[in-house]
Image (cartoon, rainbow, N blue to C red):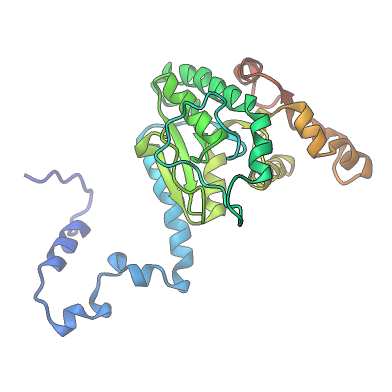
Length: 288
């Protein structure tokens, strides 16, 4: 007997999909117009349906995480190019970095000098996942962009602790395969960057930003802007590696130029170790 937990008397959409598959094969039933709208791939991908696709992309991960009871996340951001210094990571496919001429790029080679942050990200994820297991995986769940580098380290650290973790992957020309450590049923794929960013922040209890490039900077500044403008509640915002960030961004110059206020420099803190970050997250009180 089919389990039917619906709260309405209408026919189930799955039943109609099965019925449609058995209709006689005629010119009329083969015509695109006859397809059920919600199963019609060509229709769903039309330009006019973008608002619907945006809604669906927001709703699907939201519903799945709600069903899993996930209440809060620890977001890890950072470069996809930073390698595992031990060389022991498991990859379904090795990450590809396009060079245009073959071989490693200078950027990829240089990122190897930041490999210490892979270990710190992995360690932080393990520590916070141990906290998460105390709530049966509802609180402090590690969330990353789902790719290689720092993202892989975060998901891997959660796996080290025996917990689950979330990966928010996005379709890209390269580096699009999820890393092997994301919990499979919490591994999401996005078309829209904007919706992916919303999911990074909707449950964030802390935002931990490791050295990175364009993508990391984009996510970091958008998150800081939301906090600065009061569009998002303040949470621990931790930048790993003071030396890196102060060489990359002259925060003080922005304040001195008046383009940000001196108080804006308190929106984030520098940390150097996973233990330091975990202590700040554990001690944080909303409103501080």
